[in-house]
Image 1: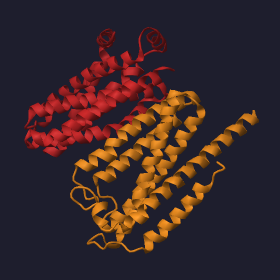
Image 2: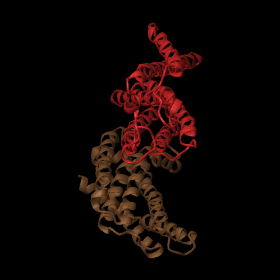
Image 3: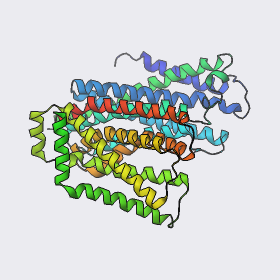
Image 4: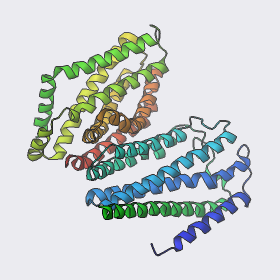
Length: 222
Length: 216
């Protein structure tokens, strides 16, 4: 944790994406107009959510291979962070949909898939809450975590691509590649993604450290 | 060994006839309630498929949920000493698949009797029922194992399984709609292939993960 350069990098990239996302010029398109700037703030949330759940999934597998309380703590912290980004992703999407589609919840396949995958991770926390034994809690929730991540893949990546959707990038609607005629948007979009992912890792690492300190305090209390 | 385990499940089921007949009556009651709730008349195709799959969802979740809950503490340890966990999960999934498809077909018959039968392409619909039953069986068996290890099993079972089942259910509902509309079979091939591949995925994951649940 002594290496703090990536934390500075995260802050710099996020400030750059806020300023760039609001001020740089963007392609003008009918209907979407200025709301295209939502791409800089909405899409990175999903990238970060998938990255967080991915790290959580990876640590759940590591836990099952070699049980160790630390890995469980890491897995939970990343699932938590991923859930937070998922909720932010839905909220930012709803703000955008309200102006572009006319209503915040439009029953779009992508919206529904995202909502369901967030439900799956809520179920993960319900499962953790209902088991007393620490070791059993860690193992069962690791199993559910792996199952949940695999079940999330068809929801987020496959089904929305098959059904007609009003979401940009689906069902004949222009996606990122068509908006972005001269790659100007990528200059802000990719740094934003990296910045948010680093921020997510930072949040999760703080939670892990808090949990470790709590455990040390509990042990000393005995 | 797997066959012996399946036989054991069937034997147990025959000995406890109350459970399976209870499930059949549960199914019957649900169908009858939907029939009465819709005012004793023929429902339109969209409501039909929604009612059908919701009824099946609740029935199969209840069916599979009992696959571990029924077992006593001592039995667990005994099985642990004589069989491999992989064999247990395969046997349970096979048996639950059999049970789920039986109940789904019974449900279909009941729906035909009470709420009419709007299906134009029967063959494709039966394949969909079988594939969905397999998907339900393979995903729910693992989840019921998790729920059985945690204490408040019934609520937990529903909470854990519903979000995961939804992606399968959405595909089935879509194919059912195609069956009702009598579209050409080639229209549904994409969905069928995805349903089959979700089946493989879920079954493989259950097979890999079950030993870790069973160990405790």
